[in-house]
Length: 257
Image 1 (cartoon, rainbow, N blue to C red):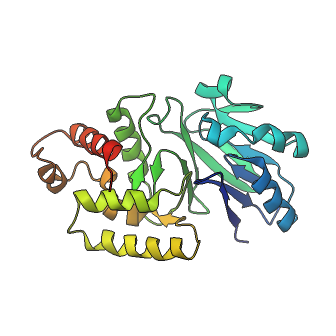
Image 2: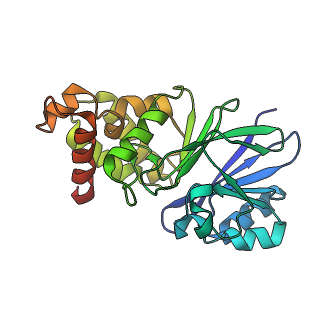
């Protein structure tokens, strides 16, 4: 039976994602920016929450954890490296660890960069990738606790995953990311088409997630820092990919488009 997914807008631009296993009725949520909309979604669906998967410790991803745990007794899973700053954590995980949600078996991938202990959750059989704030649609997280080359290495790990994975990220940043992407890759027709689709979705109040990882490989500039054409456009012909990525990230930090 196919897994059931619900994308839940939270706060101003966050997402929580519910994953429901129809075989066992187990249900998990990936990150909890705010408990209230997650509770409302669970009530609408008639699902009981069994697991809370946390990607990293930032408050806009964990502020609702304790309220959900108190109501459902859900098991809180999060990165071992950030256990001291994740409320209510029960199970700590490191790279390669399995994570079971009923009959669904995911795998932890450590992706430091945005935070030093950030993890993502990959459910290979279901073709699902929950990337938190490491990889966004048409963008990536800001490297806040590590140098940019560390985040670049994490993005390379994700880029190497199969193209048909559905990417669920932690924020609705796609339009801002798309405007920046076009500024550094103006002749990319696939990028312009994706941006037009995203604009249409947002006009209708729809989320721009999930996205296919294969589409990100073609259109997300932060996954293409090792493309010689990208380096040349930035005036960095011949530079190491990590240096190109660092320049891309610096430009995005100040981009006003």
